[in-house]
Length: 496
Image (tube, rainbow, N blue to C red; front, side, top):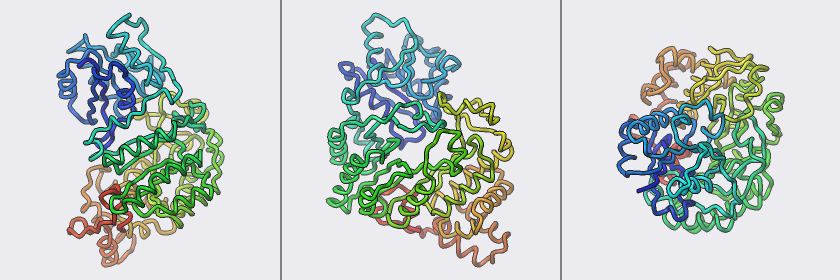
């Protein structure tokens, strides 16, 4: 073995699309190249031992915000034990602000940006000469029809046990300053017929769960419809063996033709990730986000009322210029639209993003360590931001999980943000924890909080007992139709 492609994924179920692109585009070096993925939390020495067992000459690491600290330790140990192995880095975390990063200082070479062409070229130079003089290599961005698609490099094990990431396009035309895609000039589509042929091959091999990483799936409606028709055809042909598709959509762009297609998907087969981020027009202007809020709200309402799509809608706390009251108003507005999940995110300063330009004007203070979370702004102090961080975690455990679907309305009442913040503060005061809370304990705590707010004990117990949280420890969990194809959370929401 000569070349290893490696990364530390956030979870086993996440298969690295980026590494598979590199593998597919290695050309004549393909037979000398192997993919080896790990999961964060693995022991550094064990990772290094498994890598060196292949006796590689080159190891390429995909570096991301979630794995940079652990990957740094892996690279440091490799350079001590096997300094003769060339270490090449790539990925979004090391493509910007590179001079200050310890992992870049440790490594031999770095490919910034797109690596599909540049990484194989660098490997050829390292193996056959002349050895490159420069450490940093700017990735060449070729026309997409010159990039070999990577989907054949999903293994049978990947298909059986992991989410398959796919992309019909790269890039994004929007300029939201908190996102790395704001640096793109536009969105570039892959040849649609070639892409659909790859999806056909994956489906024939048994793939049923597809997650599109396109930033703007519904930007080109003609292409969107053709892709959705692919999945509708599969659902019609094999209703007892359904597919599940996840798309990220622009919230204010949902023409009638797309609505008609969406309505044809049965329950448990379609999920939309919808980025609202903020409903405050002044905040949107500061971060260069163009969005018609009323149309976005109307589209979310329509999707909830007229489709079976599972809606996962994003809000970000800590944006420059947004205070707690503004965020609370946006949160309550979104709760009223009743999406299945609200992904309550805390602003992060991704390397290279323009959000940093607002640091002085809005008093932005970020954690210097990954994932570079906002700690305070001129509108939200550190203590309040910590409360929001805990709110986000408890919201995920209670609301997004689908485990308290019947109890949640009683928790939120007529003031969702204020009431859930009270529950969040109470849970933290009684547990001093936001992780590793057993489900039965959490259910008991929620019931106790409801009683402390004046709810009768028998009603609180009945509410909890009607939910997944109450059923789970009694062995009476309901299951939804198509539960095998549908991800767990969506299945719980369907069953509620």
